[in-house]
Length: 135
Image 1 (cartoon, helix red, strand yellow):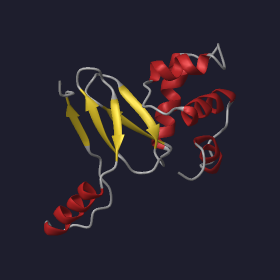
Image 2: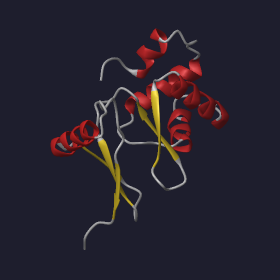
Image 3: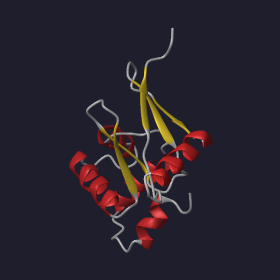
């Protein structure tokens, strides 16, 4: 990943309000895929007056500006992550909701091969696997 979300916020020419800076810092510190409510909880530890509505508006603005990606992992919540994180795919545990990030070179090659076979140059992809842990 290049710069932080906070750095890219400035580079995108977006106004850097105190609330946006707090939300960007919380997102930069996240090592998971938080939803808006979880981000709100974390951000309120820094800025107690921050409203949930402001978090939602800011997340949409950040997504529209290319700073964040949203994910719907099938649990009814929209989750967020930095759009410039190193490429990875996701495995979602359908029982716990845990999201496991992984990179597999064989899968990457296979996707390229399929795109070429169908006459396309692959410019991006998003892979989400769902499963239950073996017992």
